[in-house]
Image (cartoon, rainbow, N blue to C red; front, side, top):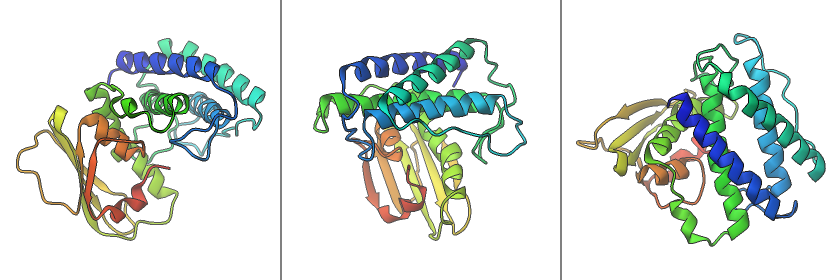
Length: 252
């Protein structure tokens, strides 16, 4: 997606997160990320901002930059999140998406566009997490949160082609063989992922829902539903078939 669209998403969701955080206590649990409280959420977001800023200045061909772990206490985590977030937001307007950058995914081009996209989707998804913390795990109105279909479709592609290669390169090797179909009816698009032992999955994007191939697993719904299903959030999408095949490509 173009930089302006992603920058709008970054601004929209970061502002919403700030407002929600102001209404909650540091100990408020995050139902969609049970290991986190609000303190953990803002610490994670600070770490993403920190990683982006350091990567944009790092050698694109180099090793992992020295990312910083977030402070464990509320005051420290919140201050760090606000500081590093403020630095990223100040830098974003002048950031050339094609500028060289270090990236953590073997499936991504080494440009700043990677980090613009990462921040857009991280903030969009964690805004949803914050909404669940505010409204409670049973808030059914959040099942149709209103992500724009094209943005959600981009998030599907991002997960399949950028995030999964990173996940599988840092986990135990994939040990299964199978195929997965992700179908987003409202945008008329689908993706087929082929799983093979000890290999990064191959992904084919399809611009039509006609004559879709038979696969071992199907994730079907709207673009938002499939986006949320892949990223491990409550969803209206339906997963059918041999769902155990998805274990090695699951979201963290």
